[in-house]
Image (spheres, rainbow, N blue to C red):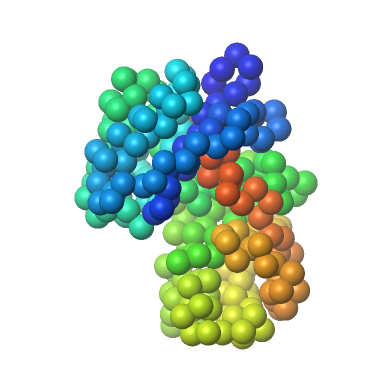
Amino acid sequence: MSARGHAFGIDIGGSGVKGAAVDLATGELVHERIKIPTPHPSTPQAVADAVAKLVREAAWDGPVGITLPSVVLDGVARTAANIDKAWIGTDARALFSDALDGRPVTVLNDADAAGLAEDRYGAAKNFAGLVLLLTFGTGIGSALIYHGTLVPNTELGHLEIGGMEIEHRAAASIKDRDELTYPQWAAQVSTVLVGLENLFWPKIIVAGGGISRDADQWIPLLTNRTPVLPAHLRNTAGIVGAAMAIEAGLVT
């Protein structure tokens, strides 16, 4: 973290590697985010080279926080969603540190980063207690934050409710694939949320992913008991959460 209270976050996705310095007092980007297309194939070394290019372009010389669409344990990627399967078993922390000339690096799951950002700066910032973030996209990502502390790598999208993985029931991609109306899809989301809130009893649920832009068309249709709010930070949440992980010295 810089003396000005800035930290640098990078969010790696299936289509783009995005990064920026973040003002940790406000959660706002210090400059316009830089985006580099995710290499194809998105092998570990190719992505690490893209990260190094982005950091050089930003002229950032401090530690870097990085998200991966992966379970990350002790800096090692254990799964690979929307990136090359060669990531599985890769020591991502060491790989990125080497690509950045040995500087300190923190690596965490992308949904976890978004959850941290929404908890401090976004939709959940005024709520104490347990916050559950769900990102509705190709699958369903999840983050659990309790009084600002992350419970990492929850992967609740793979939990079975009603005999079906919840991301196979209620991901945004399912709405598109099955040509569901918002009322039809909201009924499936409600089933998922009731199951999750019965297990975890969160104070609030934050709904992220691209479909959160249309929150007014489906959140009012939900029938679960926990308040559901659309994510505020959207495309910057991963970058902000990655920067926060540097500040916190987070090790997942």
